[in-house]
Length: 77
Image (cartoon, rainbow, N blue to C red):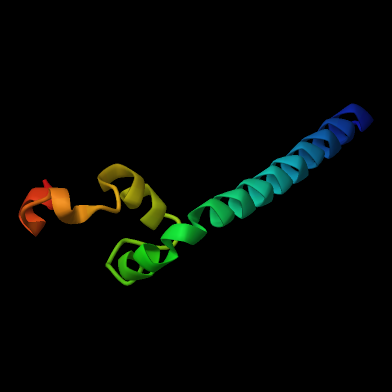
């Protein structure tokens, strides 16, 4: 492996480290924004296929006010 290739690999590792840090910052911001809906997330989390990362997506898609749905079947469709 040439010195140029080693340099390129170091640069790529540096970029990955920056992306990891950006993801950590985004995760922290999302967690802070989701605090008001933590009880709803706790209800969704035990469902199969749902976790703390997917629960906010479901909340954003169907909303937290479920009264607009007449039944669970309507909400699922």
